[in-house]
Length: 185
Image (cartoon, rainbow, N blue to C red; front, side, top):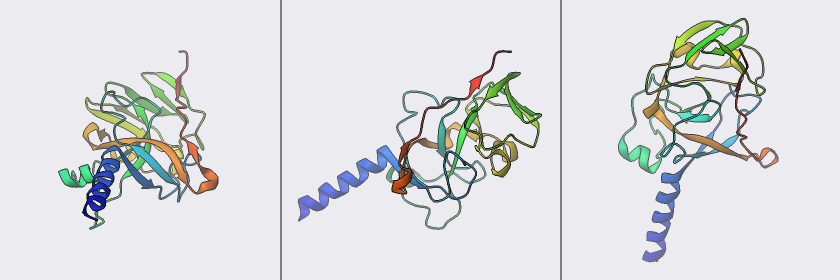
Protein backbone atom coordinates (compact mmCIF):
# COMPACT_ATOMS: atom_id res chain seq x y z
CA UNK A 1 0.00 0.00 0.00
CA UNK A 2 2.81 2.40 0.88
CA UNK A 3 4.60 1.68 -2.42
CA UNK A 4 1.39 2.33 -4.36
CA UNK A 5 0.83 5.60 -2.51
CA UNK A 6 4.41 6.78 -3.11
CA UNK A 7 4.19 5.81 -6.79
CA UNK A 8 0.89 7.72 -7.14
CA UNK A 9 2.44 10.84 -5.58
CA UNK A 10 5.48 10.60 -7.87
CA UNK A 11 3.29 10.17 -10.97
CA UNK A 12 0.98 13.04 -9.93
CA UNK A 13 3.92 15.38 -9.31
CA UNK A 14 5.65 14.43 -12.57
CA UNK A 15 2.50 14.99 -14.63
CA UNK A 16 1.95 18.40 -12.99
CA UNK A 17 5.57 19.43 -13.60
CA UNK A 18 5.18 18.63 -17.31
CA UNK A 19 1.61 19.70 -18.05
CA UNK A 20 -1.45 21.61 -16.92
CA UNK A 21 -5.07 20.98 -17.77
CA UNK A 22 -7.08 24.15 -18.43
CA UNK A 23 -10.78 24.78 -18.97
CA UNK A 24 -11.56 27.55 -21.46
CA UNK A 25 -14.05 30.03 -20.00
CA UNK A 26 -15.53 32.46 -22.48
CA UNK A 27 -15.44 33.09 -26.19
CA UNK A 28 -12.27 35.18 -26.63
CA UNK A 29 -10.42 32.46 -28.57
CA UNK A 30 -13.29 31.50 -30.86
CA UNK A 31 -13.23 29.89 -33.42
CA UNK A 32 -9.99 28.11 -32.36
CA UNK A 33 -11.20 27.33 -28.83
CA UNK A 34 -14.70 27.44 -27.48
CA UNK A 35 -16.25 27.96 -24.07
CA UNK A 36 -16.03 24.73 -22.07
CA UNK A 37 -13.15 23.18 -24.02
CA UNK A 38 -10.50 21.45 -21.91
CA UNK A 39 -6.95 21.99 -23.12
CA UNK A 40 -3.67 20.24 -22.30
CA UNK A 41 -0.84 22.74 -21.77
CA UNK A 42 2.86 21.88 -22.17
CA UNK A 43 4.78 23.51 -19.28
CA UNK A 44 8.15 22.54 -20.82
CA UNK A 45 7.54 24.18 -24.22
CA UNK A 46 9.57 27.28 -23.36
CA UNK A 47 12.35 25.74 -21.32
CA UNK A 48 14.65 25.51 -24.36
CA UNK A 49 13.08 28.03 -26.71
CA UNK A 50 11.18 31.30 -26.63
CA UNK A 51 7.50 31.73 -27.51
CA UNK A 52 6.86 32.29 -31.21
CA UNK A 53 4.32 34.45 -32.97
CA UNK A 54 1.13 32.41 -33.32
CA UNK A 55 1.65 30.20 -30.25
CA UNK A 56 -1.43 29.82 -28.07
CA UNK A 57 -0.25 30.31 -24.50
CA UNK A 58 -1.68 30.06 -21.01
CA UNK A 59 -0.45 32.72 -18.61
CA UNK A 60 -1.12 34.56 -15.39
CA UNK A 61 -2.56 37.97 -16.31
CA UNK A 62 -0.15 40.79 -15.42
CA UNK A 63 -2.66 42.48 -13.12
CA UNK A 64 -2.41 39.59 -10.62
CA UNK A 65 0.44 38.81 -8.27
CA UNK A 66 2.91 36.00 -8.89
CA UNK A 67 1.94 32.59 -7.55
CA UNK A 68 4.08 30.85 -4.96
CA UNK A 69 6.80 28.36 -5.88
CA UNK A 70 4.83 25.31 -4.68
CA UNK A 71 1.67 26.41 -6.49
CA UNK A 72 3.62 26.68 -9.74
CA UNK A 73 5.56 23.42 -9.35
CA UNK A 74 2.72 21.24 -8.19
CA UNK A 75 -0.01 22.96 -10.18
CA UNK A 76 -2.27 23.61 -7.22
CA UNK A 77 -5.46 25.49 -8.05
CA UNK A 78 -6.00 29.02 -6.79
CA UNK A 79 -8.23 28.11 -3.86
CA UNK A 80 -9.03 31.74 -3.05
CA UNK A 81 -10.11 32.36 -6.68
CA UNK A 82 -8.13 35.60 -6.87
CA UNK A 83 -7.65 35.19 -10.60
CA UNK A 84 -8.05 32.90 -13.58
CA UNK A 85 -5.26 32.06 -15.96
CA UNK A 86 -5.80 33.45 -19.47
CA UNK A 87 -5.35 31.75 -22.83
CA UNK A 88 -4.45 33.90 -25.85
CA UNK A 89 -2.37 33.92 -29.04
CA UNK A 90 1.12 35.49 -29.15
CA UNK A 91 1.15 38.33 -31.67
CA UNK A 92 4.04 40.61 -30.68
CA UNK A 93 7.50 39.54 -29.53
CA UNK A 94 10.04 41.66 -27.63
CA UNK A 95 11.16 44.60 -29.77
CA UNK A 96 8.17 44.44 -32.14
CA UNK A 97 6.06 47.49 -32.88
CA UNK A 98 2.44 46.32 -32.99
CA UNK A 99 -0.08 48.58 -34.68
CA UNK A 100 -3.78 47.90 -35.11
CA UNK A 101 -5.53 50.10 -37.66
CA UNK A 102 -8.32 49.74 -40.22
CA UNK A 103 -9.18 46.24 -39.00
CA UNK A 104 -5.64 44.88 -39.52
CA UNK A 105 -2.72 44.03 -37.26
CA UNK A 106 0.73 45.24 -38.35
CA UNK A 107 4.06 44.08 -36.98
CA UNK A 108 6.81 46.60 -37.71
CA UNK A 109 4.55 48.08 -40.43
CA UNK A 110 4.04 44.72 -42.17
CA UNK A 111 0.43 43.43 -42.09
CA UNK A 112 -0.30 40.03 -40.56
CA UNK A 113 -2.36 37.48 -42.42
CA UNK A 114 -4.34 35.64 -39.77
CA UNK A 115 -6.54 32.85 -41.17
CA UNK A 116 -7.78 31.80 -37.72
CA UNK A 117 -9.62 35.05 -36.85
CA UNK A 118 -13.30 35.29 -36.03
CA UNK A 119 -13.40 38.91 -37.22
CA UNK A 120 -11.20 41.92 -37.75
CA UNK A 121 -10.54 44.18 -34.74
CA UNK A 122 -12.81 47.22 -34.50
CA UNK A 123 -10.28 49.14 -32.38
CA UNK A 124 -6.93 50.75 -33.04
CA UNK A 125 -3.69 51.47 -31.21
CA UNK A 126 0.07 51.15 -31.29
CA UNK A 127 2.40 49.41 -28.84
CA UNK A 128 6.17 48.80 -28.63
CA UNK A 129 6.75 45.41 -26.98
CA UNK A 130 9.37 45.73 -24.19
CA UNK A 131 12.07 43.14 -23.49
CA UNK A 132 10.92 40.03 -21.61
CA UNK A 133 7.24 40.62 -22.46
CA UNK A 134 4.72 39.45 -25.07
CA UNK A 135 1.77 41.10 -26.80
CA UNK A 136 -1.18 38.69 -26.91
CA UNK A 137 -4.62 38.87 -28.53
CA UNK A 138 -7.66 36.60 -28.56
CA UNK A 139 -8.78 35.16 -31.91
CA UNK A 140 -12.20 36.72 -31.31
CA UNK A 141 -10.62 40.18 -31.35
CA UNK A 142 -13.71 42.21 -30.51
CA UNK A 143 -14.71 40.00 -27.56
CA UNK A 144 -11.38 39.55 -25.80
CA UNK A 145 -9.68 41.03 -22.76
CA UNK A 146 -6.08 41.03 -23.94
CA UNK A 147 -2.96 43.14 -24.48
CA UNK A 148 -4.83 45.83 -26.39
CA UNK A 149 -6.80 46.51 -23.19
CA UNK A 150 -4.36 45.88 -20.33
CA UNK A 151 -0.83 45.74 -21.73
CA UNK A 152 1.96 43.23 -22.04
CA UNK A 153 2.42 39.76 -20.54
CA UNK A 154 5.69 39.40 -18.63
CA UNK A 155 7.59 36.35 -19.90
CA UNK A 156 7.78 34.99 -16.34
CA UNK A 157 3.95 34.82 -16.23
CA UNK A 158 3.78 32.31 -19.11
CA UNK A 159 2.73 28.90 -17.81
CA UNK A 160 3.01 27.01 -21.10
CA UNK A 161 1.86 26.41 -24.67
CA UNK A 162 -1.58 24.95 -25.39
CA UNK A 163 -1.16 21.68 -27.30
CA UNK A 164 -4.38 19.68 -27.39
CA UNK A 165 -8.13 20.07 -26.94
CA UNK A 166 -9.15 16.87 -25.15
CA UNK A 167 -12.73 17.61 -24.12
CA UNK A 168 -15.44 17.39 -25.27
CA UNK A 169 -14.55 14.18 -27.06
CA UNK A 170 -16.27 15.32 -30.26
CA UNK A 171 -13.82 18.25 -30.48
CA UNK A 172 -10.54 16.44 -29.71
CA UNK A 173 -7.84 18.11 -31.79
CA UNK A 174 -4.20 19.03 -31.80
CA UNK A 175 -3.89 22.78 -31.76
CA UNK A 176 -2.29 23.43 -35.09
CA UNK A 177 0.86 25.40 -35.46
CA UNK A 178 -1.04 27.69 -37.83
CA UNK A 179 1.01 30.87 -37.62
CA UNK A 180 0.17 34.37 -38.67
CA UNK A 181 2.16 35.28 -41.74
CA UNK A 182 3.86 38.61 -42.26
CA UNK A 183 2.63 39.75 -45.66
CA UNK A 184 5.12 41.19 -48.13
CA UNK A 185 5.45 44.99 -47.70
